[in-house]
Length: 580
Image 1 (tube, helix red, strand yellow):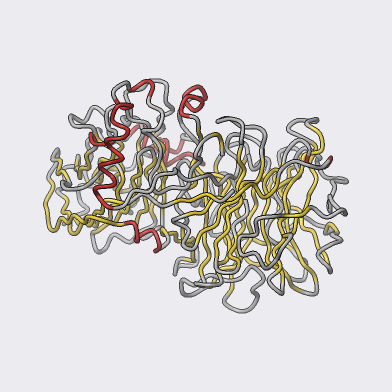
Image 2 (image 1 turned 135 degrees about the horizontal axis):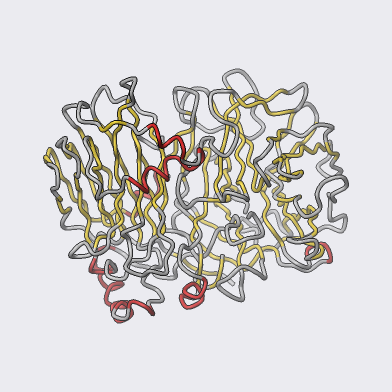
């Protein structure tokens, strides 16, 4: 939940290690090798090298200001579990290497005494940033009595924005007819028709709601007569995000952009399912409402940014590069006791550029290009045939911390297995996940399963497969499923090891499929077909750690596949510094 449960919108401190080049990675291995010998008590072996995560303890509103990317994130300074939430603050020139500052916002007033929950940042004309967040007045009724608060910088000339002030006219919004315990996560504001506007997530019974508020002066806000959008039987809408996208090209748009060739995205994080879904639609400026197109489902079974461990996301417009950037968060899949033993929990996923697919019916996502500055040693494979049951190791790579980009080809679709119509009985919103659960990497198929075996131990006692499987329907159409299966990832029986899955909307006429996976100790982020489908998995191997990690390509289908081109890089660890 944004600002409440373990799945809140959070951005977290990076590991405080500066490792340069392969020698630095080996030094990292040596430093932590002693901790890998007792697999039950490993503390730091699962720390990521190039993802944003807490130095310790448990981990809102990104923006670009005076040459720096700012990230504000919920953080528990007292422990590796939910509670005692403040807004921590980090800045970066490239969203890869970070400078960590003192917390920007801490509970200090009656209206946020019990927590400073999620929110957003808006940069007003004249380069004036403002933070909106949800304050908790009282812990009852559960999960808390919620109001909306704003904060402004004490010194606008400071590019780090290290000090923030809560003006005396807070809270600027209190619930009236709204549900006081489901009234949170104000969005970035936008401007049109003489008013600033923003939405706040809520629910009424089982109906998810995005309430719209307007202001002429950014001080006094009035609730619109009608919700901006709502949907029955979806439950609480957390961390709503609304923004425009261009119909053509990959450039992002400022949140207030209007005009021809502009479509709109509304994303909600669903408290009940712990998934997010988004729709693409139009913005009715007369009625001030959002109207989704009927091309995809507006509900639990709708489009997702990520079909795996991904929640409470937030996007922002980067004016320096004209990009829309998406941030998401992944919680731990380990037990709470293990989190406490590690001393930290939660990681921020790699920021992604997001834009509209040429079809106009879905979004594409891709890791920001700045991440490529961490690439070191490169390994290539070209035109390697992989027959049924074969495994090809990608050697010469530090496989625990890597970036892999591969294109597979195949000569025929004839051997694709028949899609089982009885799968219609699976939960609609979990269809891909459910099929991957019964058609894992070890289940032989026709065309697939084939893909990568990431974070693999020497004898394959542990591995996390990311793979494609192609089906044909009774009407001779084809379905492509991407799976990221944590089931065989760890010998530790205590871990949550789900098999995630999502369908890939792709034309198979060229008989090829592409996959990119970012591997970083305890996380695997995978992007199929240029970012049409994305899945994130959190895993905790007991054997496949540090030096004992391998990467393989595998095929368990009757149709041979060809590794047309594979590029893989060992990745440096991102640099971090702290200023207190």
